[in-house]
Length: 114
Image (cartoon, rainbow, N blue to C red; front, side, top):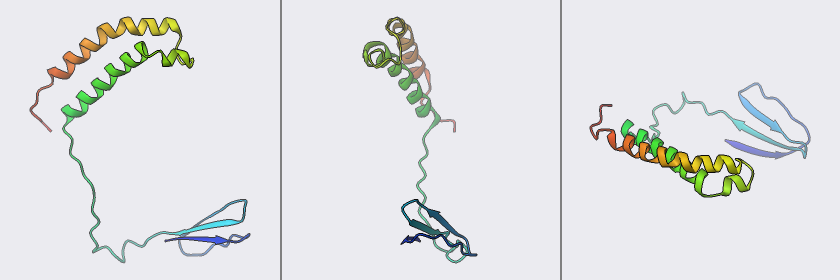
């Protein structure tokens, strides 16, 4: 439960209320929900089971795309994150890293051993 009060004072209640007071006199109260009252209620929990091979392939793809973006976009050196020399080095490294990442991503077996 969330209650919004316009007042210039903060009062503390003995029950487990959480109060937050702001400089403009607004006090926000939130009361912690008692889970023992409605424990028979089933809450839907979203559980997504993703195989480890998909997670690994995604991480490898992000790594290779990061090399391509940093080396060829020119945005990172233009805003000053990396120098022009580093950008040229990343362009050369992308020729090695991207094929290696493609090989690693394809070398994972499709069998899930989770």
